[in-house]
View 1: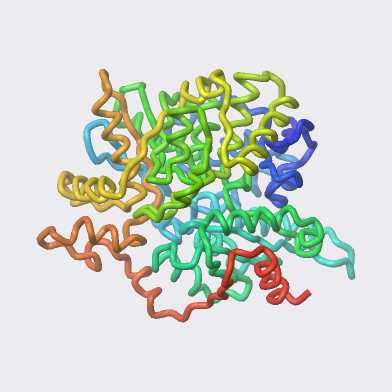
View 2: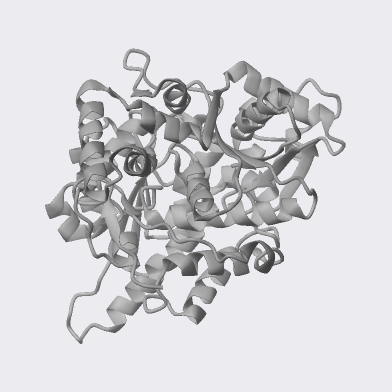
Length: 503
């Protein structure tokens, strides 16, 4: 394939950047997110040719459509993929499980940190190491080595997945910010008990949005960037979105082995919008998807947008603490990637104008806390997206319902419950049979408090026996390494990074 053109969502001008540049940079200098303005189309025979491929083989076919062979040769790409998914506990990597008529669970929690983000971040970690090794091998004696300082924010699972993807990697340092007291104990233990010297956790007195804002400010600081070579692992990094596309294809082909029904919908618990955005790319490439359904908790900015066309923070209330904390987000970072395509395809029909329009909306969001899109843009979104908001109480009830109704007493986590609840709502409304694949984003052991709230009244239920893997149980006995940041302040975070790296 020819070289892909990447552009910032907020810029009117494309940049001739390589895939390597986009991966290693993360955020564009203007604060926008990088995206490929041309989405590759699938081979005309992919439905038959790819139907029986393994997860790794599918990943190679999809990634090759985006990554020029001159950047990563075939054998190197296959090695990167194999290395990344050898860490998963399931041979299928992301197995599909039927739990009800027309409803399937896509289990994305078989990686080393028991969360869907492992699928992308095991690959991203290996990519970073691959590019750095190649760059440093080409340097002359005495030249300073290339390094990368990964700075990320997490509302729960991104942090541990990033740490496990990057731990021990040569010439890579990792700093993960998370909101103090707003992630589950196991999520905190997974991040803070890693002993590798290149891993650092910063517990910030604030919300996830505060942490995310600090990370964006750090990316916008040219002097700091030039010194520390800051890289991104949050879903603002294009490689994350790219790697996640694979499981949409893989689950589709697994489903087709079980049903002849051609109507397939994906239901995705959504916070930062990266997971479902990967599904949007799969759909735009040509995967036959009937709908992509956004499932949100009580922090429902995405649901409100789909229903009203207005994208607005709830200024007075702020972020609500819910039973599904990874979705406790006011602003979904990846949403602007979708907006760029919606503007370009439904409104301006022009790449340059799309960036200018989106930049205006982002300024309105920053200054006024909201913006409203034209009717043709929201109509374009509704052609493929639908949505639903799920309350805390219903989240608990659905965990109970799935446990009671499945022969193997299947236990789901609260984020998965938000997706399953949404699936059941849409299934009841259908006038014809439609198959639903609901993404299960985390292992239930990571959310003991909510799972126990739902299931402790059942005879014979035991969290330790039925849910908790021995590997996670052992975390509580390990020593934690945490640096506390007493206020959500970018200068304090930058100082903590400088003090740690000492150069």
